[in-house]
Image 1 (cartoon, rainbow, N blue to C red):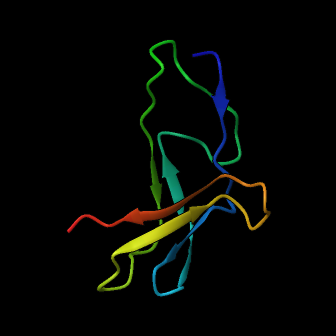
Image 2: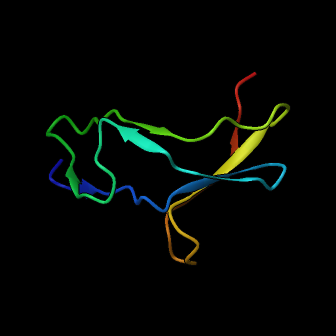
Image 3: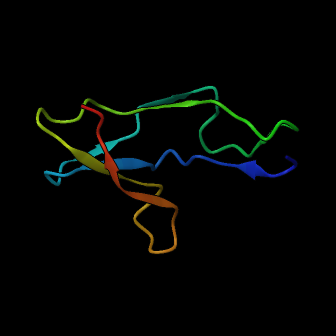
Length: 79
Protein backbone atom coordinates (compact mmCIF):
# COMPACT_ATOMS: atom_id res chain seq x y z
CA UNK A 1 0.00 0.00 0.00
CA UNK A 2 1.17 3.48 -0.82
CA UNK A 3 3.71 2.21 -3.36
CA UNK A 4 3.31 2.37 -7.11
CA UNK A 5 4.09 0.10 -10.01
CA UNK A 6 4.52 0.87 -13.68
CA UNK A 7 4.40 -1.51 -16.65
CA UNK A 8 6.37 -0.26 -19.64
CA UNK A 9 5.02 -0.43 -23.17
CA UNK A 10 8.41 -1.90 -24.12
CA UNK A 11 7.64 -5.08 -22.13
CA UNK A 12 7.94 -8.38 -23.94
CA UNK A 13 8.14 -12.09 -23.36
CA UNK A 14 10.58 -14.57 -24.87
CA UNK A 15 9.40 -18.13 -25.48
CA UNK A 16 11.72 -21.03 -24.72
CA UNK A 17 12.25 -21.24 -28.51
CA UNK A 18 13.78 -17.74 -28.41
CA UNK A 19 10.82 -16.04 -30.10
CA UNK A 20 10.32 -12.47 -28.78
CA UNK A 21 6.68 -11.41 -28.36
CA UNK A 22 5.97 -7.71 -27.58
CA UNK A 23 3.20 -6.59 -25.24
CA UNK A 24 -0.03 -5.73 -27.07
CA UNK A 25 -2.09 -4.12 -24.31
CA UNK A 26 -2.92 -4.18 -20.63
CA UNK A 27 -6.26 -4.46 -18.84
CA UNK A 28 -6.69 -3.09 -15.33
CA UNK A 29 -3.51 -0.99 -15.49
CA UNK A 30 -2.36 1.78 -17.84
CA UNK A 31 0.95 1.17 -19.59
CA UNK A 32 3.71 3.71 -18.78
CA UNK A 33 1.74 5.22 -15.88
CA UNK A 34 2.50 5.09 -12.16
CA UNK A 35 -0.33 3.07 -10.63
CA UNK A 36 -0.64 3.12 -6.85
CA UNK A 37 -1.23 -0.12 -4.98
CA UNK A 38 -4.47 0.09 -2.94
CA UNK A 39 -4.52 -0.14 0.85
CA UNK A 40 -5.41 -3.83 0.59
CA UNK A 41 -2.03 -4.42 -1.06
CA UNK A 42 -3.77 -6.44 -3.79
CA UNK A 43 -3.96 -5.47 -7.46
CA UNK A 44 -5.24 -7.45 -10.39
CA UNK A 45 -4.38 -6.68 -13.99
CA UNK A 46 -3.75 -8.58 -17.20
CA UNK A 47 -0.90 -8.11 -19.66
CA UNK A 48 -1.73 -9.24 -23.20
CA UNK A 49 0.90 -10.75 -25.51
CA UNK A 50 0.67 -12.72 -28.76
CA UNK A 51 0.09 -16.46 -28.27
CA UNK A 52 3.06 -18.57 -27.27
CA UNK A 53 4.28 -21.02 -29.90
CA UNK A 54 2.76 -24.50 -29.83
CA UNK A 55 4.78 -26.75 -27.54
CA UNK A 56 6.22 -23.87 -25.48
CA UNK A 57 6.86 -25.00 -21.89
CA UNK A 58 8.29 -21.78 -20.41
CA UNK A 59 8.86 -18.11 -21.15
CA UNK A 60 10.63 -15.12 -19.65
CA UNK A 61 9.21 -11.60 -19.14
CA UNK A 62 11.33 -8.47 -19.64
CA UNK A 63 10.35 -4.85 -19.06
CA UNK A 64 13.10 -3.56 -21.38
CA UNK A 65 16.39 -4.84 -22.75
CA UNK A 66 18.38 -2.83 -20.17
CA UNK A 67 20.36 -4.89 -17.66
CA UNK A 68 18.67 -3.34 -14.59
CA UNK A 69 15.10 -3.71 -15.90
CA UNK A 70 12.54 -5.85 -14.09
CA UNK A 71 12.27 -9.42 -15.35
CA UNK A 72 10.81 -12.83 -14.53
CA UNK A 73 12.90 -15.70 -15.93
CA UNK A 74 11.69 -19.24 -16.64
CA UNK A 75 7.95 -18.89 -16.02
CA UNK A 76 6.48 -22.36 -16.51
CA UNK A 77 3.49 -22.78 -18.79
CA UNK A 78 0.62 -24.67 -17.19
CA UNK A 79 -0.22 -27.88 -19.05
